Image (cartoon, rainbow, N blue to C red):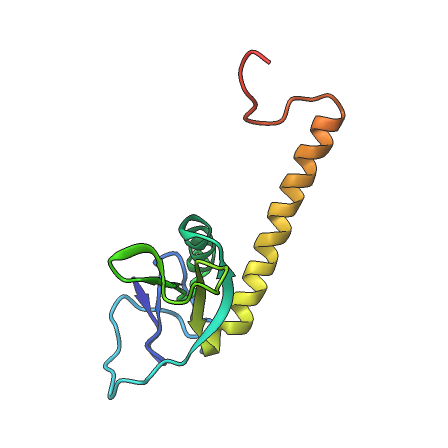
Length: 136
């Protein structure tokens, strides 16, 4: 892992500069004088674990620090705290990462939509969509 020498934020090894401080990252974490409470903001509702993990991975790949929170009762998968909710859970990010996380997910959804449209266009033109079944 890499660490910002100024703010102490942790990043994956492929990130070389802190997004906030613009300081070059180091391998050693800085001394922290006190624990600072993190304010978590709701970013996006998810319909299930797979969707949540996929979006969480997209955010983490950009050096963000998301949390995937389930609305299920711990140790009772599928049993909801609140049955009136239609969603499985949500992704939360530190409040200082909210705007960047929204931008990352916006880009992610645009890329997914472009792939979907490309596959539909190819199929409409008589081409076989990528990953099609063999023998068809």
